Image (cartoon, rainbow, N blue to C red; front, side):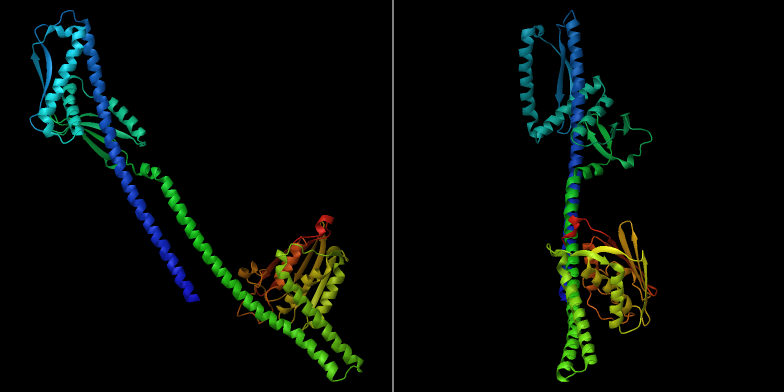
Length: 505
């Protein structure tokens, strides 16, 4: 059984370890994937910011040119400016500015709009035919056109770096990336900085670098330094991380509880076996003694001897009482689950009850002992179930005698205080170790110690005591020092209101 249980533990640990490693591997892969996605988002944000900043400048120049044309009184009838683009190779675009004769009719409002549409269509068709084989995708064509536009507009109006940074910040936030960034504009031909928003004291090694080449002919580029996105990635994954951790924690706690429950059940089963063994011997003893006494009276014809008859009858009486007490305690094992159990309250003279218990213990004890009784006041009356209160005090006194060596000295004090009765039973016995104090009232629990003298018992006496005291609405606690003795302190209400008399377990 132990070997099988160990194998189960090993299998569960291996399963949990495998699950943890798989979760770690999966989360790590997801983290790297999200990081790569964030880098692509940053690249797209830089591209879009460059595009918007470029066309903002183009729009500004267009509006300026329009105003200049409206205020010009004389149109140039000789010719006009025209922009053409030459592609010496597929990786470069060279803008050229030339002067060509123009028809003055193009300045007529109705003619100008139609002419521009026709010319634009011809230009797009011509460009598509010439360079169609040199571009692999429409996106690449658009990028080349954007770079060509940069060459022309940058020569007229330089890049507005502050505007670029502002647009980039907006696009990063739209993509869920709340990170700081700084930008440099570089001339890649001579590695010189054209413009910069990077603070002088910035440690660039702590930032991620993103390079965006926005012109090909003049070889210009943005160098954007961004904060690492690891914490943004972790924040985006927070839901997944939390749920994975929660599931793993629930599994670990579930298995831990299962193991605790199995071990606890195994302990309970062992305690039950010990209880069955011990209680069998305890029950056999009074039965055997009673049987022997009755058999002696029958077979040896001692009925005529009144003294011997009384002696044997007294023995039978004591053993039957002892047997009844044990049966009562065994029955108490299920009282906490019995809903219709009721205590029979009556007025009890505590002093008289204690005297009777001490006398009873002196008769059945196999060793001499001394008991001191103190009461404040001299006579204490309380409402309690007489039978169960008798068993409670008898159990504690019996334990005090059994665990106090050859010459037990026991002190019992009782006092009234604030509507309660406090009973202290102190002995000079072997005491109880601290690690056992929290368990001595548990069902079937017995203190096992090789240094302790063997004492017969079955592990339900103190459980019965605690159960009955709680049903009396009272409390019990113990103070003990190994080698010096123990003190059991019982607190019981002196009276019970009418609605509390029928107590449900």
